Length: 399
Image (cartoon, rainbow, N blue to C red):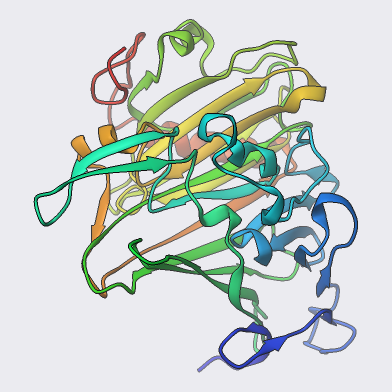
């Protein structure tokens, strides 16, 4: 049985909250695992005032967790490679400054600058009025904002665990509740785990319906990358069963959909929906890599848990947010009504739960990038990719 040292940083039930916390290899002498640290602090000044951040460094890979913003990851770095992006705002932004109903329901964007941002839990996708029939046979009309509520909900429980036995796992766990009267009561429990000296973060998410009746759930992981991984000539690779542009404007970029241009002022974002191939157990992966093919980032996930994969290309001017998103999800980022019609909205019974385990890896050598590409080629050998050149009814709302 593994042994851990555990610290509670936030516990709403027991009225526990630590303004600051530090531990590391200089305090816990764990064999050769010395060059690591976990630090919690509260940011001050500007839009970030009051945001809690937990900074994890494993000696090679570092990342910042935001308990105040749905346990998202604000930024990351691996051996000098930045893993996030430069958003056109000074964040992280405290949720009190985010009005999701602004600008026709896209106010969510005023707080969007994370490396990893969750979209959900009751809904994600564009804003609008969701007209549907509830379990009593009554017609409901719900106004849904862009990408849901979870990214702007603070964690009510946060703990740090450090493995006392090899390989000395460094774990941060948080619980975030999304609920309210006459709303679904969904609770996200997430754990980020890394090992000293590694290039990998493992994310385990568990969503529980704590309400007394069934509830719908959608979850999309918005993983965002800018330079140096994103540049003119960068590419993404994923084993494709079937793919299509989500809109007519995205169809204009289908000939080069897996390749990125440099920054272009006024670029109109493009979105591509992908049904990925996986192995016999459902395991699959996607990679973004630079023009020289010597730097890359890899997402490993299971299509049985996250069957949908979306690529968001926003190669606008650097000043406006030059970024791409690699997005494993339970659904595609269409409006919820359409995704429900396609059978891509998860329904959790009272007390029911859903969970996934996936990971992010950073690579800084040509041999490593080539090795991952070989994995993708091997999975692609199962079937020839079907690439629709215009929006397809399976993936997108008819214009």
